[in-house]
Amino acid sequence: MEHNKHHIMSVKTATLVLAMLLFLTFVTVAVSRIDLGYLNVIVALALATTKSLFVILFFMHLKYENKMLKLFVFICFLILAIFIGMTFFDVAYR
Amino acid sequence: MSNVHKDYQGAKLGMWLFLFTEVLLFGGMFVLYAVYLSRYPAEYHSAGKELNAFIGGLNTVVLLISSYFVALAISFLQRGEQKKAIRYTYLTLFMAVLFLVNKAFEWSAKFSHGIYPDSPHLRELPQGESVFYGLYFLMTGLHGLHVIIGGGVMAFVIYKMKKNEVNSTDFVMLENAGLYWHLVDLIWIFLFPLFYLVI
Image 1 (cartoon, chains in turn red, brown):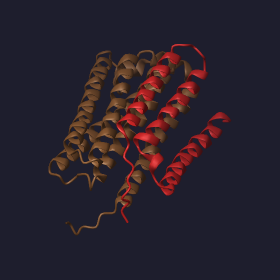
Image 2 (cartoon, one colour; image 1 turned 120 degrees about the vertical axis):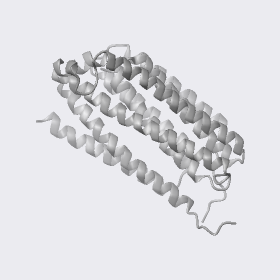
Image 3 (cartoon, one colour; image 1 turned 45 degrees about the vertical axis):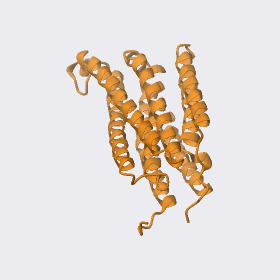
């Protein structure tokens, strides 16, 4: 059955999300200019993950989707994490 | 009234399932990038410095704004503002072209310095650097291909909106095109710092 009450994202929300994403991009560039050694990669990935959350939750509308779709997306990224994690168990202790 | 059965939830779920395969496709390449980074940190660093962080940053901003435009286009279409939705989808398409123009400038500068897949210059470089450039061309190239496809999808949805086959009561095609476009943006969010900044 079609849902009659479909959530429509407001221009204001979208603009705030864009402002946040541009701000985080600026932070990403600024932090990369400081030499933190290996931490640079970690910080850049943490910032990129934060940006991704904004894109997925708001632009991709996941925040307003049903529980099943949220669970599916979670499982997809869980599998990706297992894939990356397991590879590194192998690579790091070889 | 059309008698064609439309399954809104199904259409959207199908698109997400396709996106999952895309996540794992690029995920595999990110693993490759990370494994070689742990093996050749110094070579990654010296090769990465050659990349143009300004063009990379500019393209990040271009893609973020394009994602914003398509998100707005969906909102306008759902509110019944068909003309505005078409205009904002055009803007998304324009940003896609702008991204590709920047990319073309970036790659032609690399080519003129003898840096292209399997070039004699690359073969002389240390192994780690040539691996870095190999991954750079593979990953940004595959991403660029997605931008081209995404642009084509946007053009097709514009055509459908103009024919009023995609409208305020049947908007899932624009939503799914938007989902694909956001995924392209999402991948670039990771590619940009990993190739242009960090190392």
